[in-house]
Length: 110
Image 1 (cartoon, rainbow, N blue to C red):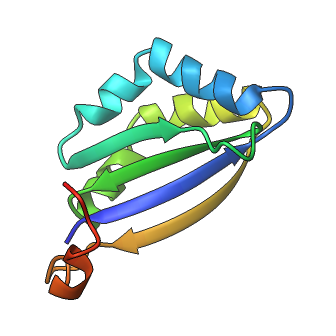
Image 2: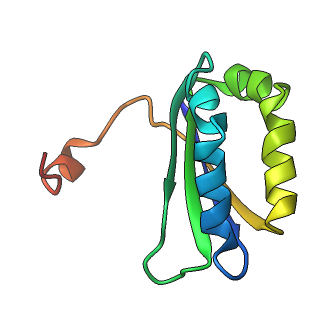
């Protein structure tokens, strides 16, 4: 069962976007994506809130998340979060092992 974590990083003066840019340019994002068990690690920018960045962070299982949290990358993430004085709101979701209900599939264009 995959676990997806939405992390909303919020700051001031464009700092959330600068944080995401530095995470990418420093190579931390590529390192995280290469970790065993990582499914997705992507930043998005909400149109209605220019001071927030959404990270969608998805993992194969809790063990993969635990290994990631014990990795050296967490220190770098924390350092950058402090550098840009960001605050976080976190949402956590587990995938539905039964997949997409048939009734919902009619509303999805692929």
